[in-house]
Length: 262
Image (tube, rainbow, N blue to C red; front, side, top):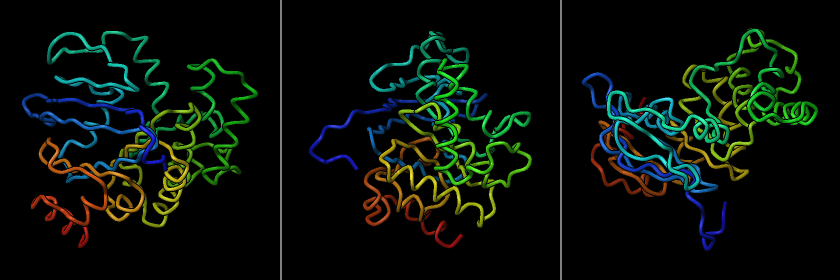
């Protein structure tokens, strides 16, 4: 962890984010920060807006209102809802090249080997040298514990191995921020442990991460701060020891109690 006396750069700043789909308002003015070296857990019940908020960071969903800053740079948006859109495609390509995202589903290209999956973005998007990219890709596969699967195809891997390959692929672009959207929700408990171990390793390395998770015990032990979303708003946020151990919100108490008995 970064020394408390050292000012840390906000990697992500979200201010007054609103997002609706048709007539359903999913996000109702959400603001939050993630600083360099910090792990932020986004928690809340299904439908609270967690995944939508995560997707607004890299503009997979364009907010209807509000601003998104990545490392101090405001993402340029134009127009009005429902046709608000990214104003500068070159900017968003550059910003996305610094954001690694891991989804619920593994999203690996089935026609490519695991190694080819990892090398694709660094070669095509970042225009890096092939030998350097391959060496780094193999190193990342070793980090997540599947170095022996480099030449396998995704269909030949277990779900846990596929998700670890997806994490390694995200790491290969050397992201400033990792976004995890329920990375273990599609996995059996036995395979879930493999993936959580990798995420804990990344947290221990001091990587900046925003993690949407249903696993409250994991969130409590791996995150520095937690943000509890309820009905599209931030109901409570703060250091994990306060959010989990000195809960103020009655709704959060109810949520944590249900999660502990789930």
